[in-house]
Length: 366
Image 1: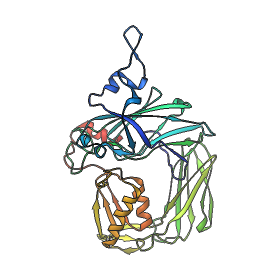
Image 2: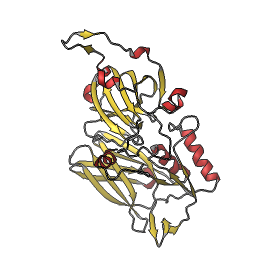
Image 3: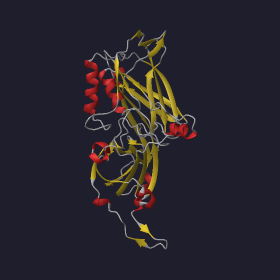
Image 4: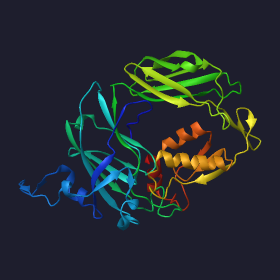
C-alpha cells in the first residue's frame, strides 16, 4: 500500500481478540454490501437484513482458520471478520491501521466505507483510516485465501495454504508529519569506524532530525531536505556476530515524532566464494524452516519462534533459512537477539506463470 510507516517504538492499540466471522464462499458480503449494514430495494426503500453480525460465532485473531475448526482444515475461499471498537481522539493528526498479514487478498471496510485492499499473505500493510474513524466503529475484513494461477505464490507450492488474519491487527497514531522510515548501518568500507544514517519523512519538508545512540555517546543532528536526510557519523561499535550478538538502542526524533529500534552493526561481504562477516570468513551451519507450528499454523507465538531458534542453536547452527516467503518481522528481531544469521525469501517458488502479465503485476504489489 502507499501508506507505509516505520512502527518501531510507537504506541500501538491492538485490535486482536474476539471477532465475529462467517464463511462466505460465494462472496455474498461483497455482492450484497453487508459492510453498509443497510439494504435497499430498487426504489430506495429499506429492506430487512438477512444476516446479523452479532449472531455470528467468534474467532480469536490472529489465527489461521484451518486450525480453529476441523471443517475449515482445507477450506480455500473467503471468510468475513468483523468487530466493534471504541476510539478516543488524542493529539494525533493521523491514525493508521496495520494488519501484519492476511492470506491472501484482504479488503478492509470501516463504518461502511471501503478503506483499501492488499494482496499477498506474508507482508504487513497499512491503511490511513483517519477520516473514517468515529468514537464507536465497526471494522470488516473480507479475507480470500483462494489460490490462483497468476498469483505469487501460485496454485502449486510445497507449503500449506493457510487462510486467515494471522498476525497482529493494530492502530498506530501519528503526527501530521511523521518518520516514514530510517536506516542505520556500518559504512561498508572495511574500517568498522563509521555508521551511516538515513531518514525519510512522510512529507517533502526541510527540517532537522536527531539520532541518538546513548551507549556510543552519539547525539547527532541530521539535515533533512525535501523529506530525506543522510549523515555519516564516526563510531566504533562492538560488532554483531553469532558469538557476540551485541545490539544497541537507537532513537530518531523529528518535529513531533520519535521512533526507536535495536540494531546490531555488522559488515557482510562475499569474496572468492566465501561469506565474510566483519572481515573474517564464516562457515554457515544452518537449517531451513517454515513459519508453522502444530498448534497455531502460521500464527506463531514468540515462544514458538524462540523455541525454533534455540533448537537450531542446540544443533550448532549460526544460520537459518526462513523459507519460502517473508516471515513475521519478529523473527528477524529474535534472530538478532539470539545470534542467528538469516536467509530470507520472497514467495517466487516453482511453477510461477512468468509469461503472464498479471503475474508480474501481482508480484509488484504483493
